[in-house]
Length: 124
Image (tube, rainbow, N blue to C red; front, top):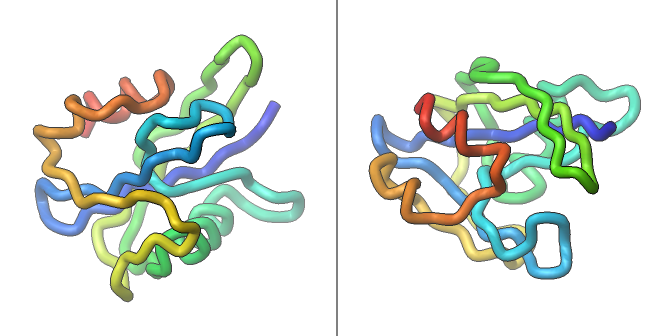
């Protein structure tokens, strides 16, 4: 069982940050919100803050836990923590060379996300 923290970064009321997962990783070639594994001796919140800084160079200022769920992909079982970031500092950049976009909420449905994200996107 892997615990994951995910940052749903909201720039304006309808603009969200998404990144393309690299090929060769689990769910590669699909779009995602920034995030990653929770390390040992780290809380879900600390992992979200760390991953956000590592992946896209921004610091969450105002955020809350938006949703939490278990998802079974068959080959991987994940405990997912989704945080909604409504205020941040810094300018988002693709620190890991990933494709990154600010996308209107209405357009999120046009991007292929991992299946676990469907309920959260609908809830937005």
